Image 1 (tube, rainbow, N blue to C red):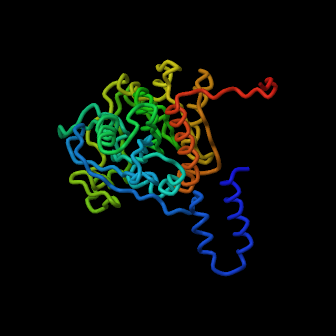
Image 2: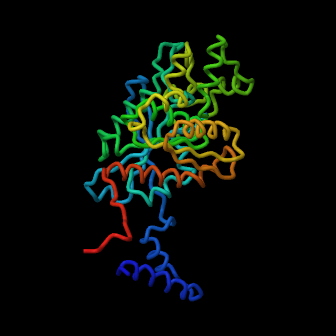
Image 3: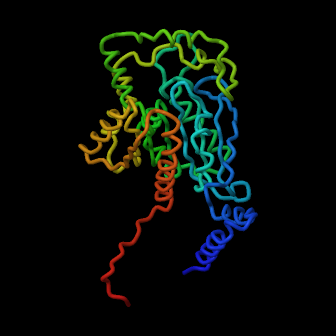
Amino acid sequence: MTMRYMKNLLVVTVGILLLGCGDISELKEELNTLGHIGLEPRTATKVMFYSESLQRDMGINVMLPRGYASSDLRYPVLYLCHGFTSNLHEFEYVGVPEYLNRMDMIVITVDVGNSSYVNWAASEDGRPLNFADHVTQDVIGYVDSNYRTIAERKGRAINGISMGGFGAMSLGLSNPDLFCSVASASGSLNSALRQRERVEKGEKPAPAEWWVKMLADTTLRYRGVDIEGFTFFGERTPRGEQYLNVEQVDAVDPFKLVLQIPKDQLPHIYIDCGTEDFLYQAARDFMQLLLDNNIPFTYSQSEGEHEEDYWGREMQLSMATQYSIMLRNIWGREFQRYDMWAEKE
């Protein structure tokens, strides 16, 4: 039994004895030093920079791990992709700043509006709509230049919710040299398939009435988003064509991409979805594809719908898994096999 274990055990034991003895503030402070989740959430700092791919200022949220300011260490980075109609602040409300207390990594949340994280094939007003390049080139380049990161594949992971789940999986599998781990939470993993069917038929998207009203609204502002020309709902929805042919769709489809990468070059894949989520079958279909092709992955499902309650509960699992995958890659070594019958010298 180590001295640290004995100290921790003593603190917990004393705490139990003191529960009925009035002020236990000192006990709470001591317990917090042991890494309990009750620590204050990490600070999310919005940072603005110029994106060459989009030809405009864009924002990211930066969450630094405990000890970053007082160390000279380099850290792995987890990039998080928000969902449809959301923004870079989404992950502040599903526990990520709290969970980060347990992990020595940097977390970056990106913002791409309602773009699906792809480079659009055509723009109505000539403004570039290269949202995939914005994430994989501009955001990563900015972060690696301004923070102490492990600026290599082994120290980089990407994850996302809903539309961001598709985005993370598509970006990760399109760029297996950039990420050692990719994850999707309640991801719209089959969205490219639906788009492919539309493109094959030569159909234009038929937006619902509520969608048309939202696009025209110039009063509804996103919380915490203040970017000229990219603040209101309509501004954050690209005007143009996502895809002009099926080849462009296939180039971002996780179901296609995952079969094109040699297995020894695939990033680790993590998928989760709630059993009452309308995207549950998409997660199951993607998992089945991986099973059929003997591709390693981690899968999680539990009761839940397409909502913050589910993501707030499950994000800690995917974050912890991706953190451990990055550590495994950073260490770059295999663990020795334990043989209990081996003869001792």
